Length: 179
Image 1 (tube, rainbow, N blue to C red):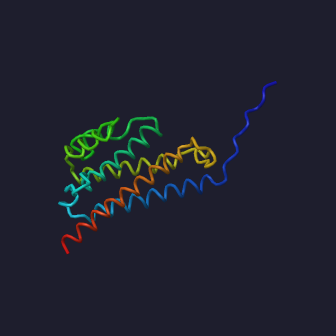
Image 2: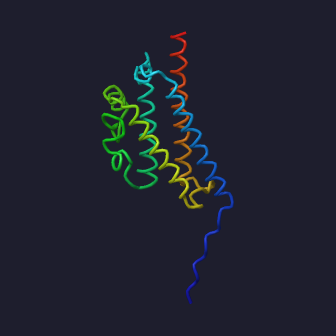
Image 3: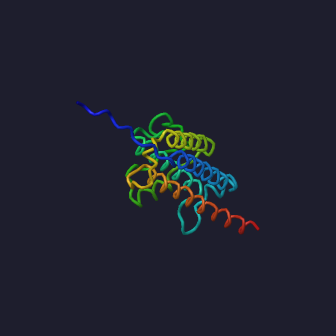
C-alpha cells in the first residue's frame, strides 16, 4: 500500500509577506528613481571627491546587482543584461561578473551611461523582480527557514535603500554647492 502524497500546509502569512515584500520593493525602487531624477545630469555623471563613483554609476550598479540576484541567482536563469536586454542596458559595458574591489573601481571609471536606456533597463529589472516575488511558492516565504529566497531578497532590498541614501547625499552636496 502506497501512501498518498501529503499536501504541504499553506503558510497563512505567505500572501501577506509576498504583498509586503512586493510593496517594499516598489517603494524602494520609486525612492531610488526619485533620488536620481532630482540630480542634475552633470552631478549624475560627476565623481565626487573621495568617493570615486558617480551617482549614475551607483544607480547602474544597484540595478545590475538586482538583475544578477533575481534573474541569475534566485531565478536560476540568465540576467536580463545578458539575455533579452543585452546591448540595451544603457551601459557602455556591463560590470565584471566576479569582481574584486579594483575591478569595480576600474569599471566605474570606464563605463559610459545612456540615462534613458538605463532607466528603461531598470524598469525591466524592477518588473522582473516583482514578477519573481509574485510567483514565489508559499514555502519560499517561510521566515523560519534561513535558506529561503526571502533572505537574499531582504539583503537586496537593503542594498537598493543604501544606494538611494548615498545618491541623496550627493544631491545634498550638489544643492549646497549651488546655493
